[in-house]
Image (cartoon, rainbow, N blue to C red; front, side, top):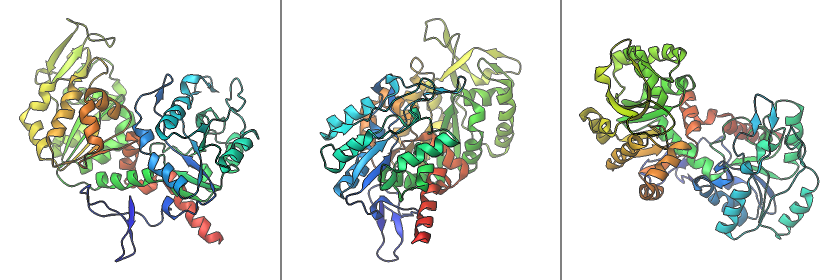
Length: 458
């Protein structure tokens, strides 16, 4: 959390407990702590995108926003909360679905149980193809109840149900204007939602805007990934190589050792050894050759030697999967689907030495094809935990959900372990790494611009 240094007046993110030392928070960033909230309606954007098929997968991304909610209410503010859930917009048909499985109801139910506070969810009329076109005046009754403290908060429907949220024209303008009319102050606490949409970016042009406590914490800790204590080991996996080129190039510059997993690793192996692995596209192999050439000189990539090959992606069937060794690779050989890293790979001397000596470890990876091929990821988590002195950063999304499902006790311990930090948005961390500056995120820059424009106008 940001604190003031009485000696020099600078705002610094510092906590004796986390061991990271002082990290200055950009003084241009407007902080929630600086906002006047008394008797103000506060529009709070969070990243509660944790619902699948109507059920909460992991409440972590909800819980880390509770301090911001408490801060707002404790200082006299009245919260209207909003988040996106899933991807209700179909790019092929260009339509928005408003199915119950992607509603905020599960999140609201969780908050009401957790906080013993009533939240109201307005029900706006929907269209067949464009979702919710307007925030109609029916919400005014709820805002009246909010101000008179008959309800604890309002939780808007899934922001991606609104036609203007991801639009770039008239629907966007109408949505943001209607949204801004609901409140006096805007707070962005959604680090994981870095895309410049209506509720994360454009809204900051209309209301006094501030960074929430979760956002501040994420921005503080991501600086430690950009400027890590060395040796620095990063573990990155993904489903498609071309989407990770930018982050990989920047990570490679900064790491001492890099471990790849998933289809990214399969693509790298094809490019280096001239083999063919099912599911790897030729265009991605061509792109990966640059990394192969780069590593011939710098030798930073830790290769996982023993892999798991499967005849099918449909499951783990006896007789249809086997281990293979990259030492046996030869140009022109073809393989079925490589679906996991065998745990023995993490026991190789070079890998163990790198993991044990690291002072910073960043993980944004699931090594195998879940849920059937989980053994490599499980072993990875165990090996990382053995290094008790390193500062360990885990990306959000699948990385955290898999961590929790494979090692629930370790996951719970990590939540209260100062040597671990669990980001709410792994994709956002990669975006920051690619750009090299957390303040360069469009959503963060919108807050900074708002502050600059606000002070110019008074």
